[in-house]
Length: 228
Image (tube, rainbow, N blue to C red; front, side):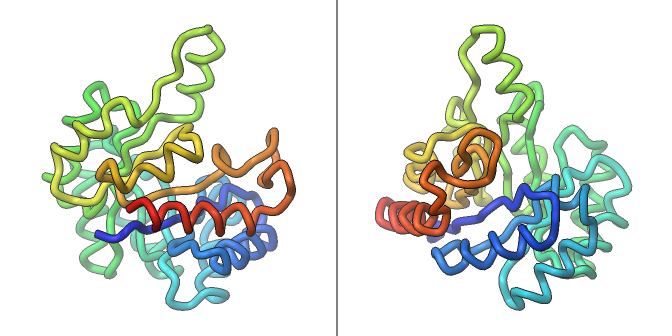
């Protein structure tokens, strides 16, 4: 499949999310993600605001669902999300409930294998349960904690090839990638490229060092499509 560029709106208020989403779409981003911080801060209101402002644009609700799968997916679908995220560490029944809700309400399900003891097996298990996409994910706290101990920080690229070969559905690699690594993901078999705070911030602010987030995103989108 052709590369898809997704921006994670890891912001905590609707106005900032709408502003960032608008410039991201102008820059060539394909999908918007209501990041977990936005969902925690604004909930369904944030998803509804994105849907109202950007009709027809795919919206990923990064719920990281662990329980109550059917209801969470239903609520986000009715608010305007087109994709929801369920965790592989959830119970099998929760994953099945999210998948069923996806079918009932017309949303796609992204299965996230973060902190699985066996990341490859976790991805395969999510596909077997009916997920439409795999999010191959090394978590923020995990990366930071390991790095703080002076150890090598893990990367989703460490097992990306194995994950891609283990499943037949599209894969997204998430977690501490450099710009160069993100751009290379489609060529490595992971066509869903997510851009978020790890790629586009200066310190802890959601902006590039130059302050030109739109220009930076445009260059990144162009590079991803050139290398696919």
